[in-house]
Length: 376
Ligand SMILES: *[C@@H]1O[C@H](CO)[C@@H](O)[C@H](O)[C@H]1NC(C)=O
Image (cartoon, rainbow, N blue to C red; front, side, top):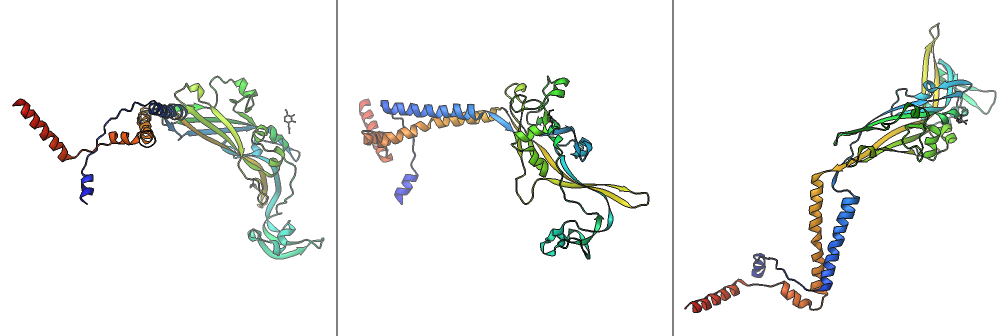
């Protein structure tokens, strides 16, 4: 108990022991050099620890699609094929349509025979309101039940896609800002000309700053086959990355584009489609609509980014951390010195010296008495 208290109320102070050993000296310097190299090479040069980072990028995206195609002998332009028309960062280009014309409120038989068979009808089968009557068609295998609502019901036969969509172009205007540094830039290069914009087409190697993308190219860069995505629909991301080192000149802060398909392929719910209708009224007051099931490629323009710039605080913190870590070399050398070197016991004795208070007093008494005798 008293030993415990005594050890608690004792003070340790460091005493430097100079060991004249080539091996130890070399190990010490090598360890210090490695730590210094790590901080300079990795922490400062590679990880750029002297900079602060802003990932809260602010961005605006405006898109414009151009092109026209043929569907069912009708020429369709972007007003018919692009939805919504505002030019937002998420838009769909319709590649195929199932059009059911002149629907009105009525009673009519359902088209699909599977829906008429109650055993195969799941919860979604009851979306329609049934009249309760079922009619047998001339073909005795199929029986159709009557539904109430917009008639005639949608015909689910799919035609060939609008292949011209492959040649449609998407123009993307993207402006970004890093609020922490007050830095703003757009994806149109400052030296861009009207003529260049009219003729250029983006390419991942040859033309990385052209803001006009051919639909077929985008799908190819995303490793997708145009025909299969046009047939079933799909979702494709156009990603714009802004990774900028603002310690360098502004001209080095440029967007990089990448493309990826976002919807996972599966057999149950294939592709992407949506329905919409156009309503009109006949002179006699009957309301009609044209129902359109649109199979489309949806493009999501996703902007991400991070900007970095020199800042005093992280620089100072990391310099202090580096200098402190250089001292770690002595820890390793101490372990070697006290355990593995020849004459470790002597070193230990030299390094840890215990001094008792009483002994000190005795020594000082002796000293003063000798001094006294000298003075006498
Ligand atoms: C797309 O454009 C190319 C070159 O202008 C043309 O050869 C091709 O037939 C076009 N594709 C479609 C589906 O119209």
